[in-house]
Image (cartoon, rainbow, N blue to C red; front, top):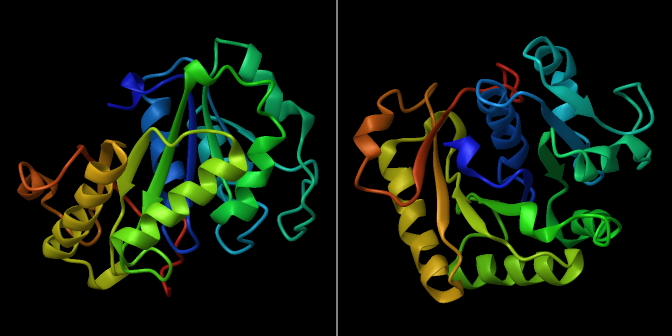
Length: 227
């Protein structure tokens, strides 16, 4: 599954899409099959859900975590470590970049445009149709266009992460698929994954044949138990 993606995986999504939850789950999956997995936290937009908050758990799983140059979790200065560029050139890495949502976060990626070999990049956009700004086909396409224009990279895959958190049912995921299939048809961007939070929808196999892309089972890592 994840090993079939290109060596550098950029993961983005509008606010509330769940892209950081997906990025962290993706990192744990990648650690099972890659010799040198790494994740960079480039999210300078959302101070509430940051992949670097799970640094210890990821490092224990063999994942190298690259975040801001400031170590403290409670500091939100948009300072980026120079180590971020190392995996661009060192091909021994399998690399995930957790990019801030919206065109504001995508500007960070533009800084590295001349350093990254775009043939090695998959740029995944995570979509939750139940969140503002991505609740219609037109809005999703608009967000894709903004991200591509601002970052200088083309989105290569869509991730259907449509959910209602603890109220999510299989039919909600399928409803998201219906929207995102239309986006895929109009843009030519394939659906790469459809997520399924096993904490809510325990039978991921029930979605087979009903949604696009590979089914990507997940567990909550970022969301606190009371949220």
